Length: 364
Image (cartoon, rainbow, N blue to C red; front, side, top):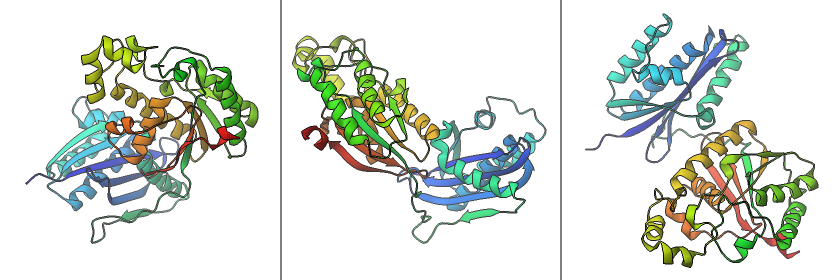
Protein backbone atom coordinates (compact mmCIF):
# COMPACT_ATOMS: atom_id res chain seq x y z
CA UNK A 1 0.00 0.00 0.00
CA UNK A 2 1.35 3.44 -0.94
CA UNK A 3 2.12 5.66 2.05
CA UNK A 4 0.01 8.76 2.49
CA UNK A 5 1.73 12.02 1.50
CA UNK A 6 1.38 15.06 3.73
CA UNK A 7 2.64 18.63 3.45
CA UNK A 8 3.68 20.60 6.53
CA UNK A 9 3.89 24.39 6.22
CA UNK A 10 5.49 26.12 9.19
CA UNK A 11 6.72 29.56 10.20
CA UNK A 12 7.76 31.49 13.28
CA UNK A 13 9.06 34.90 14.21
CA UNK A 14 9.54 37.54 16.86
CA UNK A 15 8.92 41.24 17.21
CA UNK A 16 12.46 42.41 17.84
CA UNK A 17 14.63 39.29 17.53
CA UNK A 18 14.61 38.53 20.39
CA UNK A 19 11.17 39.78 21.29
CA UNK A 20 7.55 38.65 21.67
CA UNK A 21 7.50 35.47 19.59
CA UNK A 22 5.17 32.86 18.20
CA UNK A 23 4.83 30.16 15.59
CA UNK A 24 2.23 28.68 13.25
CA UNK A 25 2.01 25.38 11.37
CA UNK A 26 -0.48 23.41 9.33
CA UNK A 27 -0.79 20.03 7.66
CA UNK A 28 -2.30 19.43 4.23
CA UNK A 29 -3.02 16.33 2.21
CA UNK A 30 -0.47 16.46 -0.63
CA UNK A 31 -2.87 15.08 -3.23
CA UNK A 32 -6.06 17.00 -2.46
CA UNK A 33 -4.72 20.09 -0.69
CA UNK A 34 -7.23 19.56 2.13
CA UNK A 35 -6.31 21.23 5.41
CA UNK A 36 -5.94 18.47 8.00
CA UNK A 37 -4.54 20.21 11.08
CA UNK A 38 -3.57 23.69 12.21
CA UNK A 39 -1.66 24.88 15.29
CA UNK A 40 -0.19 28.16 16.54
CA UNK A 41 1.18 29.37 19.88
CA UNK A 42 2.68 32.44 21.51
CA UNK A 43 5.98 31.52 23.22
CA UNK A 44 6.96 34.66 25.12
CA UNK A 45 10.37 36.19 24.38
CA UNK A 46 12.49 34.36 21.80
CA UNK A 47 14.48 34.85 18.60
CA UNK A 48 13.19 34.35 15.07
CA UNK A 49 15.17 31.12 14.68
CA UNK A 50 13.87 29.60 17.91
CA UNK A 51 10.31 30.42 16.86
CA UNK A 52 10.89 28.90 13.42
CA UNK A 53 12.17 25.66 14.95
CA UNK A 54 9.23 25.60 17.35
CA UNK A 55 6.92 25.92 14.34
CA UNK A 56 8.67 23.02 12.61
CA UNK A 57 8.37 20.84 15.72
CA UNK A 58 4.66 21.64 16.06
CA UNK A 59 4.08 20.89 12.38
CA UNK A 60 5.84 17.53 12.56
CA UNK A 61 3.87 16.59 15.67
CA UNK A 62 0.63 17.53 13.92
CA UNK A 63 1.59 15.40 10.90
CA UNK A 64 2.39 12.45 13.16
CA UNK A 65 -1.03 12.81 14.78
CA UNK A 66 -2.70 12.68 11.35
CA UNK A 67 -0.73 9.66 10.08
CA UNK A 68 2.54 8.49 11.67
CA UNK A 69 3.39 6.39 8.60
CA UNK A 70 3.05 9.28 6.14
CA UNK A 71 5.70 10.64 3.81
CA UNK A 72 6.00 14.28 4.84
CA UNK A 73 7.24 17.23 2.85
CA UNK A 74 8.09 20.22 5.04
CA UNK A 75 7.87 23.65 3.40
CA UNK A 76 9.32 26.70 5.16
CA UNK A 77 10.60 30.12 4.15
CA UNK A 78 13.47 29.83 6.66
CA UNK A 79 16.56 28.96 4.63
CA UNK A 80 18.46 28.34 7.88
CA UNK A 81 16.07 25.71 9.25
CA UNK A 82 15.65 23.97 5.88
CA UNK A 83 19.40 23.74 5.24
CA UNK A 84 20.22 22.65 8.80
CA UNK A 85 17.49 20.00 8.92
CA UNK A 86 18.56 18.76 5.47
CA UNK A 87 22.08 18.28 6.85
CA UNK A 88 23.75 20.73 4.49
CA UNK A 89 24.50 23.38 7.12
CA UNK A 90 26.09 22.75 10.51
CA UNK A 91 24.12 23.74 13.60
CA UNK A 92 26.39 25.90 15.73
CA UNK A 93 24.10 28.00 17.96
CA UNK A 94 23.52 26.31 21.34
CA UNK A 95 19.84 27.32 21.37
CA UNK A 96 19.24 25.57 18.05
CA UNK A 97 20.88 22.21 18.79
CA UNK A 98 18.27 20.79 21.22
CA UNK A 99 15.42 22.03 19.02
CA UNK A 100 16.91 20.40 15.93
CA UNK A 101 17.40 17.15 17.85
CA UNK A 102 13.79 17.26 18.99
CA UNK A 103 12.59 17.84 15.42
CA UNK A 104 14.71 14.94 14.16
CA UNK A 105 13.37 12.62 16.85
CA UNK A 106 9.78 13.35 15.79
CA UNK A 107 10.73 13.02 12.11
CA UNK A 108 12.30 9.61 12.75
CA UNK A 109 8.88 8.29 13.78
CA UNK A 110 7.29 9.28 10.46
CA UNK A 111 7.49 7.36 7.19
CA UNK A 112 9.93 9.89 5.71
CA UNK A 113 10.53 13.63 5.94
CA UNK A 114 12.01 15.98 3.34
CA UNK A 115 12.59 19.72 3.59
CA UNK A 116 12.16 22.43 0.98
CA UNK A 117 12.46 26.21 0.96
CA UNK A 118 9.60 28.35 -0.41
CA UNK A 119 9.28 32.15 -0.75
CA UNK A 120 7.45 33.88 2.09
CA UNK A 121 4.59 34.72 -0.25
CA UNK A 122 3.89 31.03 -0.72
CA UNK A 123 3.94 30.42 3.04
CA UNK A 124 1.21 32.94 3.77
CA UNK A 125 -1.08 30.65 5.79
CA UNK A 126 1.62 29.65 8.29
CA UNK A 127 2.90 33.25 8.30
CA UNK A 128 -0.59 34.49 9.22
CA UNK A 129 -0.83 32.00 12.09
CA UNK A 130 2.63 32.99 13.35
CA UNK A 131 1.72 36.67 13.25
CA UNK A 132 -1.44 36.03 15.27
CA UNK A 133 0.73 34.25 17.84
CA UNK A 134 3.28 37.09 17.87
CA UNK A 135 0.50 39.63 18.34
CA UNK A 136 -0.71 37.67 21.36
CA UNK A 137 2.83 37.44 22.75
CA UNK A 138 3.22 41.21 22.36
CA UNK A 139 0.07 41.64 24.45
CA UNK A 140 1.57 39.38 27.10
CA UNK A 141 -0.98 36.63 26.50
CA UNK A 142 -0.51 32.87 26.68
CA UNK A 143 -2.26 31.99 23.43
CA UNK A 144 -2.70 28.69 21.62
CA UNK A 145 -4.67 27.71 18.56
CA UNK A 146 -5.20 24.08 17.71
CA UNK A 147 -7.62 22.76 15.11
CA UNK A 148 -7.96 19.00 14.89
CA UNK A 149 -9.46 17.10 11.95
CA UNK A 150 -13.17 16.32 12.01
CA UNK A 151 -14.53 12.86 11.18
CA UNK A 152 -14.02 13.48 7.46
CA UNK A 153 -10.36 14.32 8.10
CA UNK A 154 -10.63 18.02 7.32
CA UNK A 155 -10.35 21.17 9.38
CA UNK A 156 -13.17 23.59 8.51
CA UNK A 157 -11.43 26.83 7.55
CA UNK A 158 -13.45 29.44 5.64
CA UNK A 159 -11.66 31.50 2.99
CA UNK A 160 -10.14 34.76 4.16
CA UNK A 161 -12.70 37.56 3.81
CA UNK A 162 -10.13 39.85 2.17
CA UNK A 163 -8.45 38.28 -0.86
CA UNK A 164 -5.76 39.81 -3.00
CA UNK A 165 -7.57 40.42 -6.28
CA UNK A 166 -5.77 40.58 -9.61
CA UNK A 167 -7.52 42.11 -12.59
CA UNK A 168 -5.68 40.75 -15.61
CA UNK A 169 -5.65 42.98 -18.69
CA UNK A 170 -4.19 41.75 -21.94
CA UNK A 171 -2.52 44.58 -23.89
CA UNK A 172 -4.25 46.15 -26.89
CA UNK A 173 -3.91 45.14 -30.52
CA UNK A 174 -0.48 45.07 -32.21
CA UNK A 175 0.54 44.47 -35.84
CA UNK A 176 1.50 40.89 -34.93
CA UNK A 177 -1.76 40.10 -33.12
CA UNK A 178 -3.74 41.26 -36.16
CA UNK A 179 -1.95 38.67 -38.30
CA UNK A 180 -1.92 36.01 -35.53
CA UNK A 181 1.85 35.83 -35.41
CA UNK A 182 4.04 34.71 -32.52
CA UNK A 183 4.64 37.83 -30.43
CA UNK A 184 7.00 37.14 -27.55
CA UNK A 185 9.70 39.38 -26.13
CA UNK A 186 9.97 41.53 -29.24
CA UNK A 187 8.92 45.10 -28.47
CA UNK A 188 6.13 45.57 -31.00
CA UNK A 189 3.98 48.72 -30.55
CA UNK A 190 0.23 49.07 -30.24
CA UNK A 191 -1.69 49.85 -33.39
CA UNK A 192 -3.98 52.92 -33.38
CA UNK A 193 -6.85 50.48 -32.74
CA UNK A 194 -4.85 48.93 -29.90
CA UNK A 195 -4.36 52.32 -28.29
CA UNK A 196 -8.11 52.97 -28.54
CA UNK A 197 -8.74 49.59 -26.92
CA UNK A 198 -6.38 50.51 -24.08
CA UNK A 199 -8.29 53.74 -23.52
CA UNK A 200 -11.60 51.86 -23.50
CA UNK A 201 -10.22 49.45 -20.90
CA UNK A 202 -8.96 52.38 -18.83
CA UNK A 203 -12.42 53.92 -18.84
CA UNK A 204 -13.95 50.61 -17.74
CA UNK A 205 -11.39 50.25 -14.95
CA UNK A 206 -11.66 53.80 -13.64
CA UNK A 207 -14.32 52.92 -11.07
CA UNK A 208 -13.28 49.34 -10.29
CA UNK A 209 -11.51 50.25 -7.05
CA UNK A 210 -7.96 49.64 -8.28
CA UNK A 211 -5.21 50.24 -5.73
CA UNK A 212 -2.12 49.43 -7.80
CA UNK A 213 -1.00 48.79 -11.39
CA UNK A 214 1.69 46.27 -12.33
CA UNK A 215 2.83 45.71 -15.90
CA UNK A 216 5.05 43.60 -18.10
CA UNK A 217 8.15 45.53 -19.20
CA UNK A 218 7.26 45.24 -22.91
CA UNK A 219 6.12 48.41 -24.66
CA UNK A 220 2.67 47.11 -25.69
CA UNK A 221 1.84 46.48 -22.03
CA UNK A 222 3.50 49.61 -20.66
CA UNK A 223 1.56 51.75 -23.14
CA UNK A 224 -1.68 49.99 -22.20
CA UNK A 225 -0.94 50.45 -18.49
CA UNK A 226 -0.16 54.14 -19.04
CA UNK A 227 -3.72 54.71 -20.26
CA UNK A 228 -5.15 53.13 -17.09
CA UNK A 229 -2.71 55.14 -14.96
CA UNK A 230 -3.89 58.35 -16.63
CA UNK A 231 -7.52 57.46 -15.90
CA UNK A 232 -6.99 56.38 -12.28
CA UNK A 233 -4.08 58.50 -11.11
CA UNK A 234 -2.17 55.41 -9.98
CA UNK A 235 1.54 54.79 -10.49
CA UNK A 236 2.73 51.90 -12.63
CA UNK A 237 5.27 49.35 -11.41
CA UNK A 238 7.10 47.13 -13.91
CA UNK A 239 7.41 43.42 -13.07
CA UNK A 240 9.66 41.48 -15.43
CA UNK A 241 8.11 38.13 -14.46
CA UNK A 242 4.86 39.04 -16.25
CA UNK A 243 6.52 39.40 -19.69
CA UNK A 244 5.46 37.16 -22.56
CA UNK A 245 7.10 33.86 -23.49
CA UNK A 246 10.32 34.12 -25.48
CA UNK A 247 9.36 32.35 -28.70
CA UNK A 248 12.94 32.39 -30.00
CA UNK A 249 13.21 31.68 -33.74
CA UNK A 250 9.43 31.64 -34.08
CA UNK A 251 9.09 35.32 -33.18
CA UNK A 252 7.08 37.12 -35.85
CA UNK A 253 6.04 33.91 -37.66
CA UNK A 254 2.56 32.51 -38.08
CA UNK A 255 1.77 29.11 -36.63
CA UNK A 256 1.78 27.64 -40.14
CA UNK A 257 5.16 29.18 -40.99
CA UNK A 258 6.72 27.79 -37.82
CA UNK A 259 5.22 24.38 -38.62
CA UNK A 260 6.65 24.40 -42.12
CA UNK A 261 10.19 25.17 -40.92
CA UNK A 262 10.22 23.23 -37.63
CA UNK A 263 7.50 20.55 -37.90
CA UNK A 264 9.01 18.16 -35.34
CA UNK A 265 9.88 20.90 -32.85
CA UNK A 266 6.40 22.45 -33.08
CA UNK A 267 4.76 19.07 -32.50
CA UNK A 268 6.97 18.46 -29.45
CA UNK A 269 6.28 21.96 -28.14
CA UNK A 270 2.52 21.38 -28.31
CA UNK A 271 2.84 18.06 -26.50
CA UNK A 272 5.36 18.86 -23.77
CA UNK A 273 5.47 22.04 -21.61
CA UNK A 274 9.17 21.36 -20.93
CA UNK A 275 10.00 21.85 -24.63
CA UNK A 276 11.02 25.33 -25.77
CA UNK A 277 10.90 26.81 -29.29
CA UNK A 278 14.36 26.93 -30.92
CA UNK A 279 16.28 29.59 -29.00
CA UNK A 280 13.27 30.31 -26.80
CA UNK A 281 11.58 29.53 -23.51
CA UNK A 282 9.37 26.61 -22.43
CA UNK A 283 5.98 27.06 -20.79
CA UNK A 284 7.38 25.39 -17.65
CA UNK A 285 10.05 28.12 -17.46
CA UNK A 286 7.45 30.84 -17.99
CA UNK A 287 5.22 29.28 -15.33
CA UNK A 288 7.99 29.44 -12.71
CA UNK A 289 8.70 33.13 -13.22
CA UNK A 290 4.99 34.03 -13.39
CA UNK A 291 4.39 32.27 -10.05
CA UNK A 292 7.34 34.15 -8.54
CA UNK A 293 5.94 37.44 -9.85
CA UNK A 294 2.55 36.59 -8.34
CA UNK A 295 4.15 35.72 -4.99
CA UNK A 296 5.89 39.10 -4.95
CA UNK A 297 2.65 40.85 -5.86
CA UNK A 298 0.71 39.11 -3.07
CA UNK A 299 3.31 40.18 -0.52
CA UNK A 300 3.60 43.77 -1.76
CA UNK A 301 -0.14 44.29 -2.34
CA UNK A 302 -1.75 41.95 0.17
CA UNK A 303 -5.57 42.25 0.21
CA UNK A 304 -5.53 44.95 -2.50
CA UNK A 305 -7.12 45.11 -5.96
CA UNK A 306 -4.27 45.12 -8.44
CA UNK A 307 -4.33 45.52 -12.20
CA UNK A 308 -1.80 43.29 -13.97
CA UNK A 309 -1.19 44.28 -17.61
CA UNK A 310 0.32 41.29 -19.35
CA UNK A 311 0.15 38.87 -22.28
CA UNK A 312 -1.65 35.73 -23.40
CA UNK A 313 0.64 33.13 -21.81
CA UNK A 314 1.14 34.69 -18.34
CA UNK A 315 -2.59 35.43 -17.99
CA UNK A 316 -3.56 31.89 -19.04
CA UNK A 317 -1.00 30.45 -16.63
CA UNK A 318 -2.49 32.44 -13.75
CA UNK A 319 -5.98 31.23 -14.68
CA UNK A 320 -4.68 27.65 -14.93
CA UNK A 321 -3.14 27.88 -11.45
CA UNK A 322 -6.28 29.43 -9.97
CA UNK A 323 -8.38 26.56 -11.32
CA UNK A 324 -5.84 23.85 -10.53
CA UNK A 325 -6.00 22.86 -14.21
CA UNK A 326 -3.31 20.96 -16.16
CA UNK A 327 -0.84 22.72 -18.45
CA UNK A 328 -2.75 21.39 -21.48
CA UNK A 329 -5.63 23.71 -20.53
CA UNK A 330 -3.66 26.62 -22.03
CA UNK A 331 -4.55 25.31 -25.50
CA UNK A 332 -8.26 25.34 -24.60
CA UNK A 333 -8.46 28.99 -23.57
CA UNK A 334 -9.10 31.89 -25.94
CA UNK A 335 -8.00 35.35 -24.83
CA UNK A 336 -8.83 38.47 -26.83
CA UNK A 337 -6.69 41.59 -27.01
CA UNK A 338 -7.58 44.15 -24.33
CA UNK A 339 -9.71 41.56 -22.51
CA UNK A 340 -10.15 41.55 -18.75
CA UNK A 341 -10.12 38.58 -16.37
CA UNK A 342 -10.13 38.59 -12.57
CA UNK A 343 -8.92 36.20 -9.88
CA UNK A 344 -9.28 36.42 -6.09
CA UNK A 345 -6.31 34.86 -4.24
CA UNK A 346 -7.07 33.98 -0.60
CA UNK A 347 -4.45 33.86 2.16
CA UNK A 348 -5.26 30.27 3.09
CA UNK A 349 -4.57 28.82 -0.33
CA UNK A 350 -7.65 28.70 -2.56
CA UNK A 351 -8.29 31.03 -5.48
CA UNK A 352 -11.48 31.94 -7.32
CA UNK A 353 -11.77 32.89 -10.99
CA UNK A 354 -14.42 35.62 -11.12
CA UNK A 355 -14.36 36.63 -14.79
CA UNK A 356 -12.52 35.54 -17.92
CA UNK A 357 -11.99 37.22 -21.31
CA UNK A 358 -14.37 40.07 -20.52
CA UNK A 359 -14.61 42.37 -23.59
CA UNK A 360 -17.86 44.30 -23.21
CA UNK A 361 -15.92 47.55 -22.71
CA UNK A 362 -14.68 47.31 -26.31
CA UNK A 363 -18.19 47.55 -27.74
CA UNK A 364 -18.97 50.94 -26.23
